Image (tube, rainbow, N blue to C red; front, side):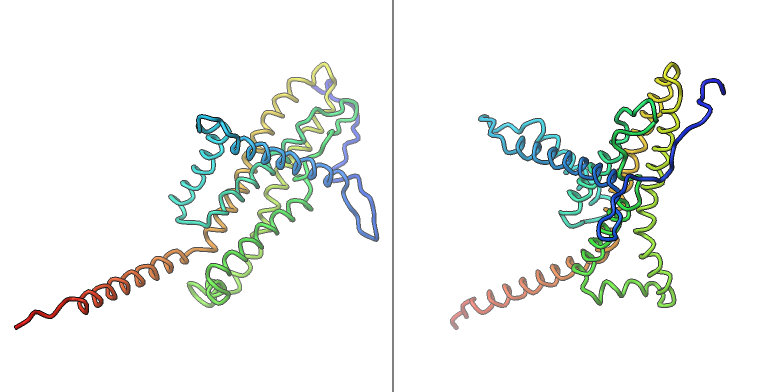
Length: 276
């Protein structure tokens, strides 16, 4: 078995092509891969919108429209069945995150340079700069959503529940969420990139079988990690808005009761008094 492997390798772990500008260092490979993934998602989005807006003449939905509406409908249904009613923008946001992370994860599956074991495009999610950015944007959106739904006082009140003594732990848990969200995605994709680089060092006559098998496995891992990130996003939004729907339903019930009483009183006043 040792004869199949090269005597030495030049794999570098966690290193990026960088440029420095005004004292700031930028990872060029991560930026390039992120832009490519973003452009692909935008092109897919424009394609779907164009397909959905296409006039078929017989008013029959296109296959893309049916597929997209089915995906969004199923996500909304699963969310409402398991977590209750969530704001309508949550499902599209989760779907957009899923496709962006999925494409970003799969960029590393593009055939490698056989002579060096390097990737043509590295997965940007194997860089903590991107995963921390995604997690930060997600959690800031969740916190903003929770405050808008419950109000500032109502949202921060849940940190003292069920007991005020748990306030420090609840705050720590909330601050740890974006860190775990980012590192979970980074760790899995980074490990996959290392394996692909190692397999790329295998001599060409024994290269295709392990490379093909690992890339198929890495595709599954990339899809699972994208799904987990999107699922946790939905869960965090649901947790941030928990209890708000019950309050709204209670307010709607009270409003309905007031309306019925007003209609009853108006009907009593309008009823003519019988003559004696």
